[in-house]
Image 1 (spheres, rainbow, N blue to C red):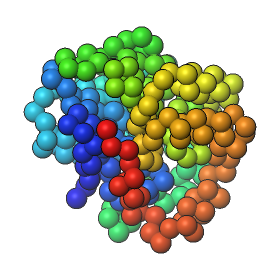
Image 2: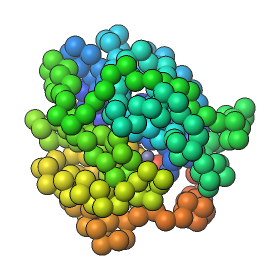
Image 3: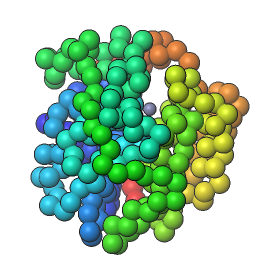
Image 4: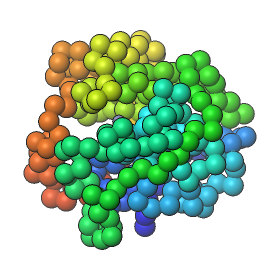
Length: 266
Ligand SMILES: [Zn+2]
């Protein structure tokens, strides 16, 4: 199976690429609506994502990237409707490897399982150009007919990071602005002070459920814990290679997905 789908509710499913290291695999969210569906983030593109989603839905699809990084944006080109923040539009249209953060240590770790994807060569990996067909910015609303998501601009991790906020269900799709793991604030286009302000904003939203860019979903107590740790300087990823080695050492098989039974049900 190229993907696994975990149905969290009638509206929301989590799609995971198989054969991608569990600490690198971005969460792909399929959100079903009356008028159209959303696909939030698109993974590393090692298998065709659109075909997988079309097996479950015959409604129009709007694909959204929370930001341009390679682990989120490599499947975007498959979709006809491609939405993201204007600050990263030029990167998505011309995705050089350094611009999508596929450079340095990120190219030297085995993100893809050679047993499942024997043809994958990390030195040949690149993100296919996927020019945006529309922009999403602060205050825009995606109205699915039976649910509405407000766009939040959440810069810091990257300049065009966005989140999708459903005030009715108090649910935030947070991308890489916030997940339950060490946060990345030292990339070439990260801004630490901006990131702090974004996290303080998220903490004050009143959200109760967080569907993040990586790792299992969580609630507001965990959110506050992560934000507090970050603000104390204890939740930032500093060295990719030692992080990778720790992840390998703590797991018998880094490509076996995490225990998602702990994922918050909504
Ligand atoms: Zn990222």
